[in-house]
Amino acid sequence: MSNPIRLYMSMSLDGYIAGPDDRPGQELGRDGGRLFNWLDDRESDGPSGQVYREALATGAVISGRRTFELAGRWQGDHHDGVPIFVLTHRVDDGDVPPGHARFVTDVEDCARQARAAAGDRPVMVHGAGAAQALLRAGQLDEMEIHLIPVLLGEGRRLFDHLGSDHIELDLVRRLEDRDVTHLRYQVRRSEETA
Image 1 (tube, helix red, strand yellow):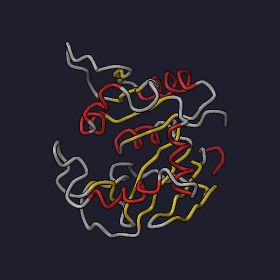
Image 2 (tube, rainbow, N blue to C red; image 1 turned 120 degrees about the vertical axis):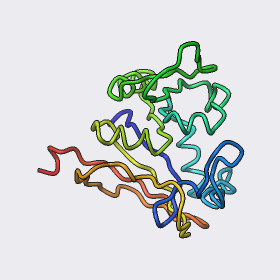
Image 3 (cartoon, one colour; image 1 turned 45 degrees about the vertical axis):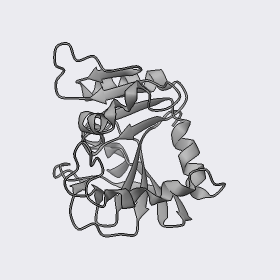
Image 4 (cartoon, rainbow, N blue to C red; image 1 turned 60 degrees about the vertical axis):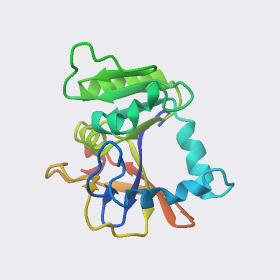
C-alpha cells in the first residue's frame, strides 16, 4: 500500500488512551501522561526514535475534533506544515481552523482528501473517534499502537464505540523498547477475511 491511513496511538494494556477527566488543562487525563514516557527516547537511534521519525514523515493528518481541540488545534501545524483534516460531526459558522487545518464532515471524503494531500506518504490518524469512524467506513489501513505496560483502570478507551462488527488484524511489526512495545497491525478488509 503506497500511502496507508495509519493510526498512531499510545495505549495502556487495558485499552486506555487517556486517564480519567481528560479536558482542557488536563488533556491526557489524570495520570495519562504515563502513556507518553516512551517519547523521552524519540531522538534515539532505537525503536522509539525510528517510530517517531516515521510518524513525522507522514504527509497528512486526520484528527478527531475532540483530539484537535484538546491539542490546542496544534496552532494549525501538526508537523512540517502538512494538511490536517479534522473529522467532525458539524462545523459552526465562523469557526475557521488555523493554519493547515480544515474541517471535514464525511468520513470517506476525509480519507480521500487526506490520501490525495499525502501523495506517496502515509496519513497519520489521531484520536479514538476518528479511528473508530475510519474503521467502520473501511478506510483505516493500519494501526501503530504504542503499548504501555500499565493498567490505568479508567479513562478514555480507544475502541469503546466500534459496534458489533468483527475486525481482523494482522501483526506486521513488533518493536520493543524501554517502557513500550510498538505494534503495527494491518487491518484486514472484509474480502480478505471471507
